[in-house]
Image 1 (cartoon, helix red, strand yellow):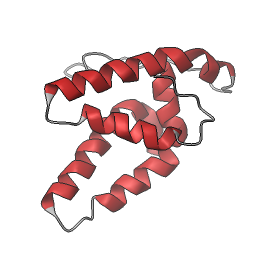
Image 2: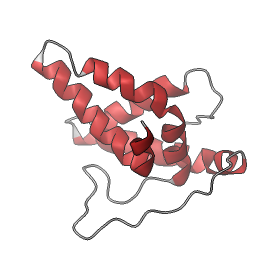
Image 3: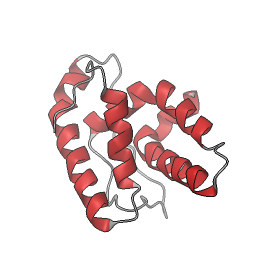
Image 4: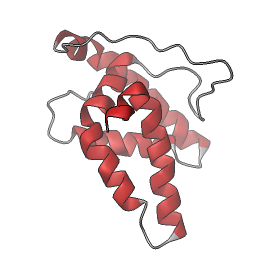
Length: 126
């Protein structure tokens, strides 16, 4: 899968991939994680070349763990892409968390948790 920062449907594709990471089926989680990692490696260079900021690896505190299916920090390219689209993604997920059904709220908040893994310290600005 190839996702580029200026692609019209990038935000929608990111949400679909993140939803796959939140899926209860392990096979779907693994498939989404593989595609996220591939996309992150594909766009790592274009994002950092066009970025004014320096991407730093964040060292988690003691006792920190990534939610399943993550084992380690996602690739820098995909993290930057999520950070770039946070302004659109977070309000959408917060709006969906107001759904009248329990399942709708649970899905939105589970997806938000996944997005927070990619957002890292950038979420404080939103």
